[in-house]
Image 1: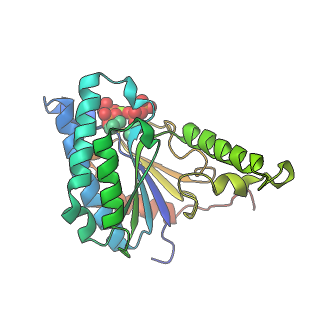
Image 2: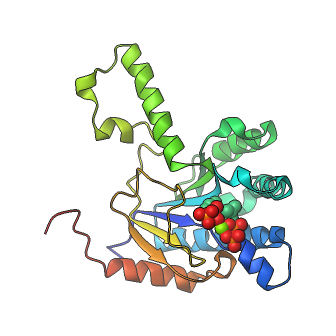
Length: 232
Ligand code: IPE
Ligand code: IPE
Ligand code: MG
């Protein structure tokens, strides 16, 4: 328990394949996946994990058929509205990503849930919605440009910390562990800046089938890794 990852990223992938295997529409997979996030995040919080970032919708997921995008947005809306479940376990909910492309309705619910859970003292769960790691880095550079223009910083000040301070999660440790189920072994634009030294845990299980036992196994495997950060 004294070697828990502080920050775990989860790429919730495989909802569509989960549904297909059962002869169900993809939307049923997304619903099952959203349900599973509640189970896994509650478990992670009880285990003592401090930060979870869950990849819910990428900046590239707009490429999907409009029908599926609409379903995903509706699901996010009902997820955000589920205040009792989300805050019951002392979880603080925060959303990261480019909110400008999200509907007013979703933006309103994000404000409500963030405010509703802000004094909870358990785990912090970041929901990555319209999130892209590259977009996040571009955003931080734009923010830095404003500070340069206002004379707050100059070229000589630019360093890694100045970028880390301008990403969506400035006060959060880099991701110690990134979990990706469903058999894909790629980052898909998730936490690019924060994953420089992340440990990765892959499995063939589709996200809706990913259990608390799988989560525990990922943590145990993580604890057996030797993180050198370039040292010896
Ligand atoms: C992940 O499941 C959910 C989102 C990307 C929103 P997918 O919908 O990508 O499921 P597969 O990869 O098609 O099985
Ligand atoms: C990554 O999954 C995004 C989310 C889980 C939200 P994708 O299914 O979109 O990733 P690719 O397209 O297989 O790389
Ligand atoms: Mg996928």
